[in-house]
Image (cartoon, rainbow over all chains, first blue to last red; front, side, top):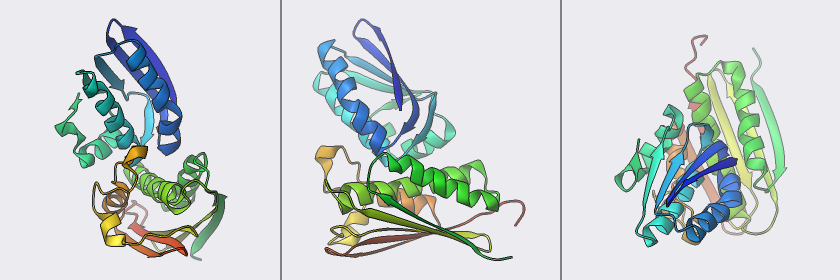
Length: 101
Length: 143
């Protein structure tokens, strides 16, 4: 999985491409949290447009970032989820705590 | 037509999660599945293999065996590890239940397998290992 970071003030957009599984989540979560913490991010946008695959490890990954950003009184948003990515997101009920656009 | 099968043995390294689901998907392609069916199978395989890596073997490396069989228009996938086993399978299958929240596990693995496949059987014995058997009927236009 690859991540592209786009930062503007306290808003950080992460564009994920490739496959968000256990392997991909473990490799990238520290790097993302470091950015959030060091740059005082209060709005995290996760862009799934170029994501080819997600499983329940990806849900764990999203919830992990949600917990981090909430500790900072921030908000998190998911954008551009494809139908197949949406299927897992909907099943998890994550939409109840995170805005999915 | 002969019933087709494939047998794959991999070490429990997280880098193999991607290989395992891609290999099973490639094997199933002869049934002419829809994109959604292939996506469901890949996700279910990913869940079972990830469970074997994280829970079956924890921080050690052991073998994961994957068997796939096509019988008529149904694919059967067996994913087996020889790790620590699951003490309470019913509990493990409950959505959102996880023994490893600190690792950001969502506790949804078995729920995903159950939803995305037609049938799920989990056999496990402490210190012997875990065997996950999943079946899915492929409703391709050729069948």
